[in-house]
Image (cartoon, rainbow, N blue to C red):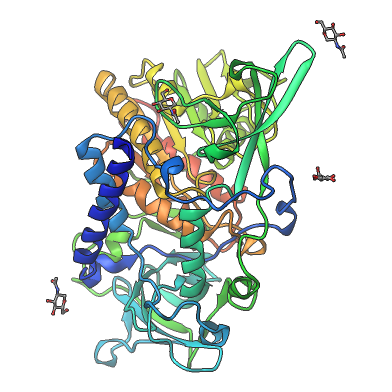
Length: 571
Ligand SMILES: *[C@@H]1O[C@H](CO)[C@@H](O)[C@H](O)[C@H]1NC(C)=O
Ligand SMILES: *[C@@H]1O[C@H](CO)[C@@H](O)[C@H](O)[C@H]1NC(C)=O
Ligand SMILES: *[C@@H]1O[C@H](CO)[C@@H](O)[C@H](O)[C@H]1NC(C)=O
Ligand SMILES: *[C@@H]1O[C@H](CO)[C@@H](O)[C@H](O)[C@H]1NC(C)=O
């Protein structure tokens, strides 16, 4: 066995030890930031393809050690272990797998109950509301273990108000959802079972064992010859010689099978290959039935609505309350009100945005959910002109300039893995490298949004990518401390995509927790897309509606123009 392999084995053992120790986590740490709704894949994503035909299941064997490229330092390994421990998720007890389907969580048989207010005095703004969920199986028997994914939110339709709730897994079939009470009047609890714990177990296995379930391809071209081969973060080595296309600077691993007649350096374009099929058994497929056990509302045992009275004096403060601390903001009258952080400005119309951005360079790096920000800005700023009009509509890269006010906007996709129509290899760039190429300073804003394309890989892939981006952000903030760095988090997707093995709320939430932890001590501004989308009255969408995109961009602008050196339109 090579040293690398041993390293992998040893760190796996270490991880196991830590998980055992940390099983005793206290309840507050167990609060998970679940919030409502989600997604998955449309049936037609499941195209058949000959590329993966007969691909053996990936295993963490020699050909699939997670750090073949640029092994992490001891500190990085420790951090990675702590990260993975921090998102440890309760699993069905050993021996309960595979359960008979009738013993899995059934939202239709499950109920939630609002916990009565203290001393029956009613609820006041500033209080907390708690609801207890009791999950049952399809035979109506109470579930005895946890690990289900629930999302919770509180809403008021009249005031167009909403806030995400925090869900605690008691690991015995009971869950608590807690909500901060932030407005007067009625508040309606919504609880949704996104995935049963049994489905989560399948997703977990997918994540570790089938990183090939989304695959990619590259065209290699020289003169009039061209060949297409399969590519991915990992490829089994026993199926032919590989091209090692690992990024030499950031160390991000990438491989393609070597074309038969061309050299590796003839790689010309990258694109989505397809979605592997037949990933789960017929029995397991029963765990992913939209409307049956994926994204199904849970009913209230009695009422789902309470009335909230005006705040009393001396009500609890945000500083100490864990639920308030976990809540990044709420919607009221359809406008997002962040709790804490930079006050939210309203940048309605071109002149407000132009005043803020005059003299600014704004670099946006990420997936299509960040491209929405670029497109939004372009649509409201008539003086900003897109420069590279001929670039592909989806992958860009794009640059737009307002030469009167000296505004530059740039959007660039992150490096592979990206599920995208063919993109030239010359345009595949890694964010860490791009950041190293920026001068930075008070006239520079960097916006990052990296999440949706990483869900099919073991978390280590995401951790490694973020680690390099974080290093580059720290270098940037060190050489140019005035640079504004903004991170957009993941968000839930539309229910019609529910149950997908490729893009999935559970996978996304796990990743999101890693992202937040890794940048916790870095001077960045967060745009909590997850809670915003959960709180908003509009249906969830992988690409959130324009109203929410506007609020996200307004938050970014509020931060960029926070120092009063720029005109700042407080609402
Ligand atoms: C875990 O918690 C239980 C009770 O909650 C306690 O009896 C046990 O000693 C704890 N174990 C460790 C390793 O802390
Ligand atoms: C897949 O391969 C088979 C033979 O190996 C061929 O008959 C079929 O047309 C191929 N399908 C596609 C979609 O390329
Ligand atoms: C691919 O290249 C990187 C360096 O660029 C190297 O660290 C890594 O070990 C190589 N991978 C394989 C499988 O040879
Ligand atoms: C491809 O190019 C070579 C020389 O560059 C030429 O001899 C050959 O006929 C070309 N083939 C086709 C199919 O055009």
